[in-house]
Image (cartoon, rainbow, N blue to C red; front, side):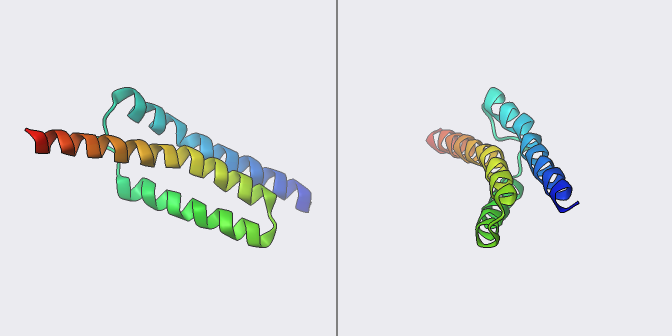
Length: 95
């Protein structure tokens, strides 16, 4: 039973990571940060990094890999948002 729960947990973490992909694609395609909360995605990224550290201490490979996948996808949204926000603010400052 413990193994079944571990597999379901790992699949849940993979699904969690996949939930950030549409937002990352939308930001990348539109080339704008509008409508994206940097605080929300930045906070998620920090929590996922903490999850990776916790998984390391617990020797939980499912948690480490799941949180790493989530950090990759959510971190992409965070970095794209930062990039486009800085670009937009520089454009406003230059005018």
